[in-house]
Amino acid sequence: MHREDNTHLTLQCLSLSLSPLKSFLEEVRAYSCKASESTISIYRPQPFYRDIRWMPIATRPLRDISTIILNENKKQRILQDISEYLHPKTRQWYASHGIPYRRGYLFSGPPGTGKTSLASALAGVFGLDIYVLSLRDPTMEEPEFIRMFSAVPRQCVVLLEDVDAAGLNRNEPMVPTTTNTSDSTYLNNTPKTLGQPKAPEPVPYTANASAISLSGLLNAIDGISSHEGRILIMTTNAPQQLDRALIRPGRVDLHIRFELPSREDLKNLFLSLYSCDRQGDQEKPEFENEKEKLEALAEQFSKSLPEGRFSIADVQGFLLQYKREPKKACENVVGWVEEEVGVEGERTTNTE
Image (cartoon, rainbow, N blue to C red):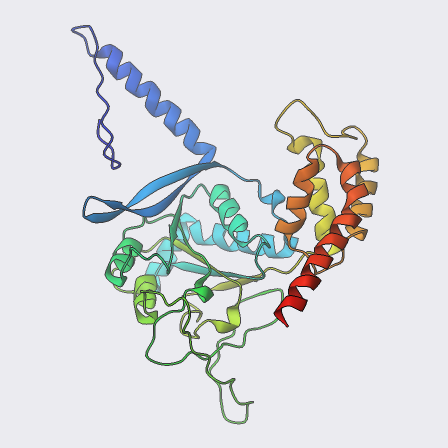
């Protein structure tokens, strides 16, 4: 047997019959199919001899979408949008109307708010693998980037992370786009007209320049060699810095904004981590049979944290110190907040 990672496996059977080998391979195939139903595969471009190919780098268990701390309306909107897009009749509808069968999403918000986590959870919900591309990969020039983009399967999630930080090479400066400020909305990229306020001054990209030009990225996304059927998810911390051409409808069809968590979000995070039905082992957290007490602790915990100050990743990192001790987490959260605020204050003072 030969795999793309150049690993060889030789099977021998001390018999004149091939039946044992066939039975073994059928069992391996059945096991692989069963395992793939509960996991997703992550692929990245990897060097292969003198070439670059897609290689699996990890498999992850499916993540329950309910563990993603995000406004429920936003979650339902993108779930419905992807579900409709992947419906068997949708592809024919696109073809009948001469529209390329592609779908693009932009996840924007501060670091640590769950943008990549949502992409992973969505891939699990719809049974799709994730193909990760980086605009800052030092080993990949533009032709290889375009070729790898066009080599993804017809049904998969293509993930482009931190597209604002790549510093796309361009001959012209970039004009920030003004987007709709609603929680979850299709991007408003209507051209400026006379009588409207003057557009912001162009903001050039200079730092962390990417080997991929803007035109190269646009060609990869919807050029003539780009496959149909895939789902593109781009993440960014600064959507206002993205070029208007990159986020126009057809390339980005739905924009999901992530905010720093509210008290309700913090409460849901607490309940998600300490709810007994989330536990994967026999050792249960405190209050496993006392739902009301856990609810009270969650309420106490959320009120001890300022809204819009810490990311989901920050708070989750704190809670992981008390995996099975929700009461202890509540007792220590105030001290943690004071310590973190003090550290932030020192950083601000040092930078002034």
